[in-house]
Length: 227
Image 1 (cartoon, one colour):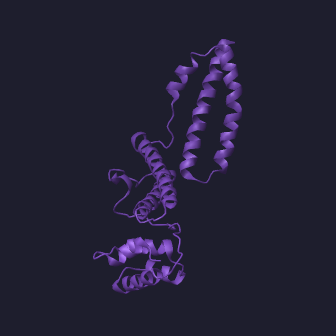
Image 2: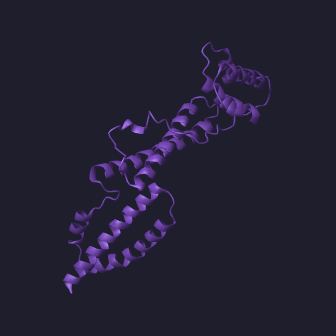
């Protein structure tokens, strides 16, 4: 039974090579053919792709498979967000790690965006769309960290003024209660930070830890004043 999307590609007068590759990724089984059509896009590769799809379209009882996106290198020209004003020349290692991870995630998101429109399975499209949203959330979060560093020259953003103002309004009982709660949370954050290998998550945990430590310091100072 012919597959509608493959038939449409074969009958098209303006065949997109990437579209054809995505179709074979969904339905094809030959690893050799996949390796070949992924290795280039010359006339030779195009003919091999067309032949592979013609043969595939003659088979019966073929079900679509998820497109395996794999790892894609970021485009050095079209960087995420096109924020050309960001100068990473003197950036700290942590910011460079976050930038590199962001670029990889954005490259993955771009490939997913290109592939979703040629997926025949509604379930596969939904799964890919959810993954795409997660990737873009991660990219946006990374940009927030980079923007914070560019604006303030710090990887970690403190909220010391807000913490001090808030603690000043707490009663003696409330101070003691929060001090008891903050201690274990600070210990847990330190353990999580030591175990975490993701630079973006490291910054997030470190920021939360710094905020809690600042609050604890201010609570202790207020308690000393009330003695």
